[in-house]
Amino acid sequence: MNKRPTILLNPGPVTLTQRVRQSLLREDMCHREADFAALMLDIKSRLANVYAEAQNSFEAVTITGSGTCAVEAMIDSFCSRDRTTLVLSNGIYGERIAAMLAAHDRPFRELRADWRDPIELDKAREALLYDPGIRHLVAVHNETTSGRLTDLTPLLDLCAEFEVDLMLDAVS
Image (tube, rainbow, N blue to C red; front, side):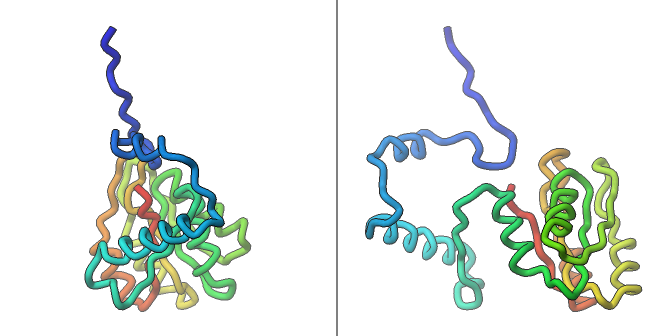
């Protein structure tokens, strides 16, 4: 019987390539050993080189957890306790970001659109115009539950206009 390969369309980890499967067959490596430290430094160095323009301005950080773990680390590290975060939500992952902000006791405002609809930039502009306490804008680039991709250029322009930081869930 010829079995069809499974293709996972969920956010990562996704379907593994044969090359990755082969590397997983190697002997286990202890996270306290020099070989592991060297591997992590190599990964960090290679990540920093993905975008040439970011090499001198940013540092790559490896997060040993799920995409949700990475987004929560971003939220907890960068969303201030005394300024509002505006969450543009049009699906489960945007709603999850709002829940994370609530769990970490961060002030936020959620602009929720139906999961079938794009982010409403006019409402985001209105929120930024009438609430000067907003410091961060958070959005999901690819809302994988619906397949909706948010165009980043208008978001970047909006954030530049109001001098707020843009944070993205860009896991998938």
